[in-house]
Length: 186
Image 1 (cartoon, helix red, strand yellow):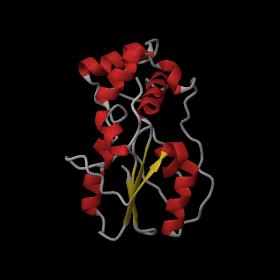
Image 2 (image 1 turned 180 degrees about the horizontal axis):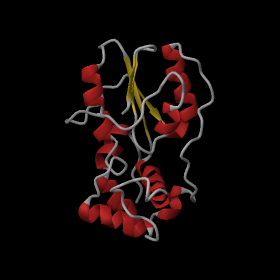
Image 3 (image 1 turned 90 degrees about the vertical axis):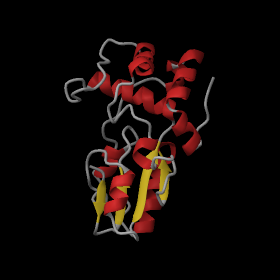
Image 4 (image 1 turned 90 degrees about the horizontal axis):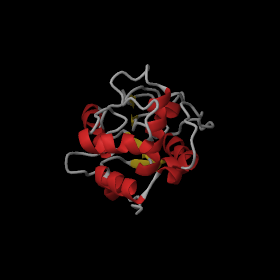
């Protein structure tokens, strides 16, 4: 699961496809998996620093698509993306909403039922090195270079979208766009 770290007095919420696996490997973070902020904040002492990361929903979904294609056997119940186009993948989410941690909105992990985010710090994948340093400094933790684990190889996320796919993803992840301030494309 994400992690409550008593040594450094923090709560890390691991949002899928936002560099969380790399963060978990840092000595001062730890944890594994994807627990929600609602659950972990209820279990942690109130004075612990809570934090997590978000990512542009368009970029995140391209990464999830490629990760699913690369790890079909490692992800039981994951969308079967091997040989499936990105367009087909997005349309399948629209029609039947494949429910895996990786395709759920980021608000599922970081927010309460009213989409209020109660974390002390929400970093961005787009500025991950700067933001992880902010967290390390705040916790008095050793700052080392974030390892780059679980990378996906693909073209720039913008290359995957047509106006129709922008619209579908904008609707599917509307809460993520609204809560975390990402711009919808059309």
